[in-house]
Each structure stands twice: as C-alpha cells, then as structure tokens.
Figure 1 (cartoon, rainbow, N blue to C red):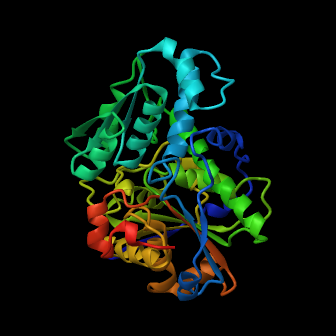
Figure 2: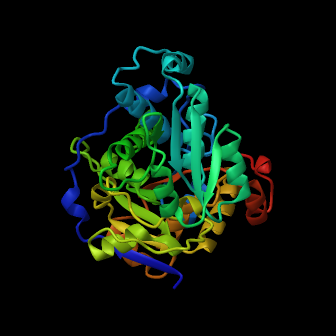
Length: 388
C-alpha cells in the first residue's frame, strides 16, 4: 500500500456547530519575545501544477525563535497551567522578564513533556525563558540532532525504550507539586492542559485571516493540516467550523502511512491505537493514539489521507524550489495535498472536496530543518542555500 484515504461521512454534521476560538492566545503571544506573524506565502508555481488558482503556505519554519509552530501551544498551556497551579493570576505583565520575576518566589518549579522533538523543545524553551527546570522524554529512535536541540534549551532529555505513547506515559509520572506535565496529547483525567495547547495553536489561523484580509483575498476553499495526535487539526477544525463563519472550506487531514492513528480511528468510529514501532521520516506525526480532547473536533475533517515517506521527500524539495525550508514533518501537508490532487482517482477527490480550477488552498508548513543533516540528504542543499 502506498497510501490510504478515508472520506469522513459525518463531517457535514459538525459544520457551524463549534464555538469561535478566543483571540486571547493571540494577544498573549504578541507579548512574547520577538513576536511577529509568520509569513503567508503565495506559491504560484505549485498552484499551477496542482490545478489551483492559489496555493497559500503558512510558513512556520521560524516561530518565536524556534524552527516550528509548537511554541504557540506550549507557551499558552504553560502560562495557563502555572496560573492554575499557583491559584493566582499572573497578570499584569508586559514582557517575559516580568513573568519570570513573578514566578521566582515560587521556585523551584519544573515542566515535563514527552515529544518526538518539537513540542518538547518548545516546552524547554518556555521553561528557559521563565527560569524553570525542564524534563523532556523522547521515544527510542529520536535523532541525535533533535535530542541535542532539546538539551540546548537547558533541559534534561531522557530516551524511553518504546514508542511515543510510552514516552507520554513516562512523562506523566513527573507530575507533582513542583513539576507540571505539559502534554499536547490527552488521556482520561488529563484533558485540560492539552486543551490549552489546542487553544494556543489558534494564533496560526487568526494570522491567516488577517493576512488574507490585508491582501483582499477571500478565505481558502481547502485547508490542509498535518495530524499527529490531533492538536493542530483540532485547532484548524475549531477555526473553520465555527458558528460565526460564513465561508467554510473543505478540510483535509494528513498522516504518515506508518502511523495513521486518526484515520484508523475515524474508520473504526472510535479511538484506536496503531501499534509501533513508527519509523516514518515525518517524525512529528509518529503517534500511536489520537488525543482524547482533540478527537471530537477532528470529526469535522472531510477527508483523511495517509502518505508514504517519498511524498514528504518530494514535498520538501518542491517547497525548497519555492523558496521555503521545510523539514520532513513540515512538508507533510503539501505531501498529502499532492497525493489527493495528483494521485489515482484525483478527479473524484477534487469533486468530493468541491475544488475547481478557481479554487485556493492553504497548507501549513509546521517546521523548518530540525535535522539539518537529514535535510541536506533529501533536498541536496544546505537549508541556508534556500532563497525566497
């Protein structure tokens, strides 16, 4: 099998039924160091090849000093978790130094997380900003480059002999009065913090709205989102299926063929786990089980596609050709879009998604070159040689 597709028969039932996301996380992020909206890149060459009027790429390869979007969810979740844990508001504050000063009397405090790389580094980065300890747990097979990046934030990084789910289980044991677990996935009894992670990702889509409005462009006809445990996909669904939105695009979710836990769960009609080992190069999507808190929102996604690694490699090279650096996970949304629009039965899937030659699509490139050696071997050049 080189791909798997699942059209969601129940997606239409969620249209217009979700509460609008709050702008509060966006206002929070605007106070973080060096905040600026990430670029919304028009990729006309890719659009023509895919038979679209426009292809927009929300490029998250550099976000708040890190090479991925993950700090958006991690920072908001950490902020909310600390406030609840301490039983007091952390307002008012003007910058991250103010927050660190407010937390200093409560030391020692630590943060813990499991990760395939980017989420854990984001939690560690937030901990460093706030003067907290960070304990990060990764599954076996995590690349040395990603471990080194986590440790560069001053965190300890422990390799767990097992899959991502087993790393999550290990990180959960760290919860105490002096250590808060900041997970982007959820399980029974642990749903609040992952819900805040989802809220944090809403900033991406509010920025897209603002950028398109400034360009005089309508919203996209199709939005493509990569799926690991589903936090970003849930944020996407909440934004584009909210009750106050008149123009509702089709939604396409993308997973690696080797770890398509959400597609398998949607097909089964309930949450199921896909046993490992998961060895896709799209490492940020190598997940066993969908997030419990994200699961209901992902029912709004119209079509799920699972792709093989070669699609991601191809997408990395194509994004480089369009002047954007994308890691293996970062290129996954484009990889899934290409599979649907250029693979077998593409005419059928275009019709099902309501795409005409005048349609526009939005993909989120979720990371840059988080493993530069791997990037060079796939793209054939150093990331610094890629020019807009």
